[in-house]
Image (cartoon, rainbow, N blue to C red; front, side):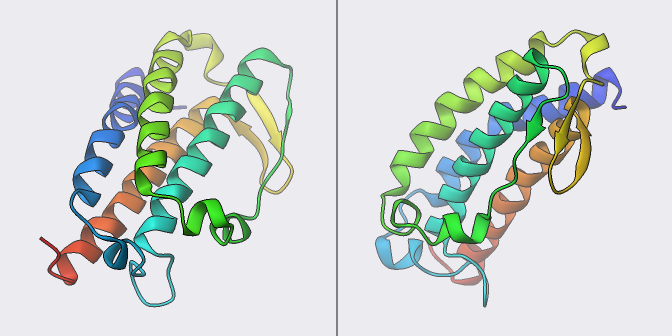
Amino acid sequence: MLSRDERIRRISKIRTLPTLLETAVAGLNDTQLNTPTAPGKWTVRQTLHHIADTNMNAYLRMKLILTEEKPIIKPFDQDAWAALADTTTVPVTASLALIKGLHERWAVLLESIPEDKWGKEGIHLKNGTITLDELLDTYSRHGESHLGQITKARALNNWK
């Protein structure tokens, strides 16, 4: 299990991610947003929308675990989701707004979880048993990882 201080740091990452993402894509045009973050990877646009998709799933998974006894956590095909029109064509401002509101609520939810509840479990159909602590750890790193892909693409392409 994570320590209280480790949880605080991870919740802080979730709370601050929206602002960091806004900065990472600020001023990018459609050509830049439709450029892959690296060869064979999703575009900047797809990556940003993917963060919204996965974080919505994570938030709901955590709420299910908090309110049910060992709920079933359904996986999803992230590559198939990334190919859908709402991920390939919609302006990134839609997901930035969604992420901002979602993360505000998510941080409040996470900060309200009592110490004795962090070990509560759900059953992920692909990965097996997963706790709230594990989800917090995974998704605090997930957003950070994709943010890194976007900022690296911006730097490598010299996008101002």
